[in-house]
Amino acid sequence: MTTVATIIPHSRPAIDQEDLRATVEVLRSGQIAQGPWVERFERDMAAFVGLQGGVAVSSGTAALELALRALRIGAGDEVIMPSYVCPAPWLATQRVGARATLVDIDLNTFNIDPLAACQAVTNKTRAIIVPHLFGLPADLTALERLGIPLIEDCAQTLGVTEQDRPVGTVARLTVCSFYATKLLCAGEGGMVLSDEGALLERVRSLREYDGAPALDPSSFNFKLTDMQAALGLSQLERFPAFHERRRVIAAAYREALSSKAAVCPSVPPGRTHGYYRFVIRLPHLRTNQDGLLSLISRLEEEGIHCRKPVFRPLHRYLEQSGFPNSDEADRTALSIPLYPDLTDEEVRQIQQSLAKVLS
Ligand SMILES: Cc1ncc(COP(=O)(O)O)c(C=O)c1O
Image (cartoon, rainbow, N blue to C red; front, side, top):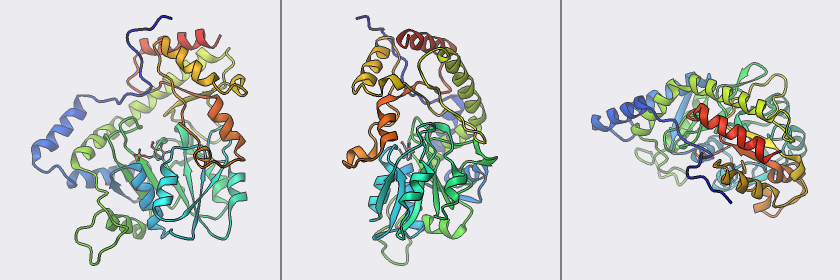
């Protein structure tokens, strides 16, 4: 077995001199906690997404919790979400005391299946959390028809469209994450965005405990710092360049995989893809429990760190069954490194290694 000395990581934040300058400027200002930079970040993010306003918070998970609280969702209520997603939507739902109803995904897009969501609606359903996974918007048009308030989870998808509508502008509330390896990074961080001022006011009042007229156990310290906001603002300026670089790398991977037994990301009509992740499906691994993990090991020996895009579907944690597409994605989906900082040389190395390992 040959093991290469340096490995191309699965994710890497793109930090440049301007990011450093912006962050140091805040450190030197003497005002480093939540302040004017946070306010500017909220205004600029809202304008970027295409909404009236935003409230910056400490993480995407906190943003989900506060979005549910803004809709006054709690005990006795049900929230629909896909099984194939990280635990954040489920955790947020538990924290407000509601019940999470898991549904399957559309295997073609990895996003929530609107038909499965429709079948899961009951008279207790109060919201559907719609994660747009890997850079591709979910089928918002079909989900909207269900008449249930949507919460768009844009942690992985920004700057793209569904039926010419910018992602994040369809739901009553939208959440973002600024975790280190997300599309825009601030180390950690999140935001709730909306056109409805009253919902945003409620999020704002729950974000901190100081100055409240009465003690509210659902409030907490969910604040973002000016240091993080300065980094987020600096990253936001570079979003168009990040987006373009991601598209160029995705096209290179499509070319390298064109003759292989791999299904490249699909882009349904009326949607655009932002390639937060480049997730391929390897249908031949469908019946092989350990096939994906051994493929990941072989790519690691080639110097490429690939990953399962979702660590474990929620229904598997919760020992539920009846999610065949999530199970298939869990066995066959592979995420290949794709981020703006990848060099052309690294892209070539990944192309060659994929061609070798998948031949
Ligand atoms: C789809 C989705 N929603 C929510 C989150 C939670 O964001 P955070 O890590 O900032 O809490 C993530 C982050 O991994 C995510 O991928």
